[in-house]
Image (tube, rainbow, N blue to C red; front, side, top):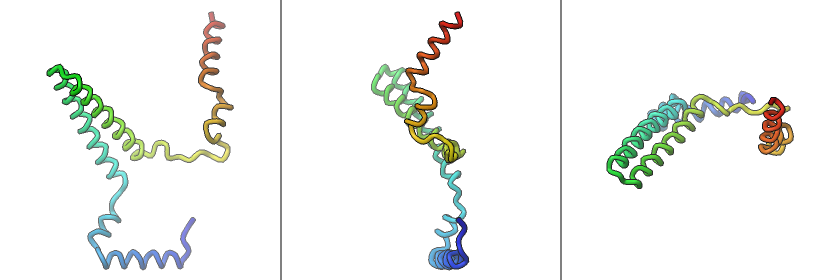
Length: 130
């Protein structure tokens, strides 16, 4: 919903007051792009993943199970962090469902059936093809 003229003027006045009070901070906030934030997080996650590989390999060479498991956990956490950043950076999953889309788990189950029903249907189709 667009802003009215009055609201737009108020917003401009607030912005000018902010620039007058702290121009460095206001400029930093204004030019920052959320995608840059997620790119930095993705780079940090990649470094964490590489660090996890190194820790895991050191644990294998030293035959230390806790160190190897710790390295794997670091790798897994970095991978999950990086994937979430990548999803947010690329905008995957941000699209809202349309007005006719099914809402919630119950609506999805009625249209496709439960997991077990789908597996049973696949099993029946395999036996019918023989």
